[in-house]
Image 1 (cartoon, rainbow, N blue to C red):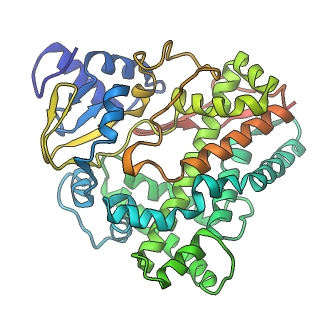
Image 2: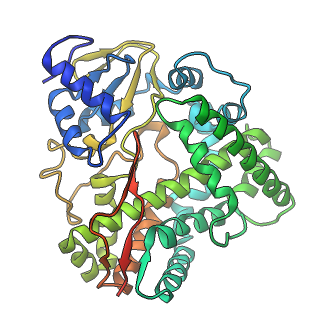
Length: 419
């Protein structure tokens, strides 16, 4: 039931091939492979890189809280590049400033400054505005008549409007030009990076920096109470954030907030419409069932299925009977962990009435995603209003196209009939 380091047994070789495929060229539906990997090797060291992958819910939950796994930007860059790293490149100078690469106590100091506007209390105060954004976008979608693509006209537009509100940026009309730069920027978070990816990301980050510099300059004299103005005031009071830190982390949070929320909203809607009985449960009680629907969507088909090799062991760590040596890396596989039958009975069933759902989708420990409350809340409101306004909504195409990447799985287009 377990695999040994670089051994040649059939089970080890099978697990190694599965892990390699999942982290490089995953199939449209990765879950059969996830199940097999978790069954034969819940902890496995890959022969090609020496990285460890963990796919058991219990073991991964413990590993995410393990303080002997730390963030090390230089180590991550060397692994992603497969050798020497040119830190003078614009994209790498930018990424080096992201607070997610820091460790406690520095990490907690920066996080506390940057996340004041997205705490549970702060997000709860935004619920009325989020409701307004949802209805505004759905009014526009309904006005088109007939069929509408909810990915294009709703699931991307909602988190974009919301995060711009949180940051204090002007509300965007349509898709602003800088939004296209996020794709090239995001490619640098993949397990391995090519020279072409870096060239594209360099250009993208220079464009994003220019846009961000203009926004920050405008906001330095603003009296508004937004995430950016709060950070600017904290800077004046000695907070440990430079202008480069502020710019890099604002872009990071902007990109992450739009992509994570858009992908979850799309995956959740598709899961509900594919499972008509669950959609009918939500329609019957939108207020009471929306939270359960979001948690089950996070468990059943979260967009982020794994993380880059960014958790470095600084001491030997034992997981599931294996020792991850100091200097080796653990890669969390959220996809199989969230469907572990030892944690969730009948894990491949989508059930919004499931109890005690605690998906690992936002990570764990001190580096748990600071934006999770914003993501959860806007998705709950979106599903609640969709179910209330359009109880007869149906898919136009049952086989909605997927965007499949080594670490992510999301809906590419979602054409529906609203009424």
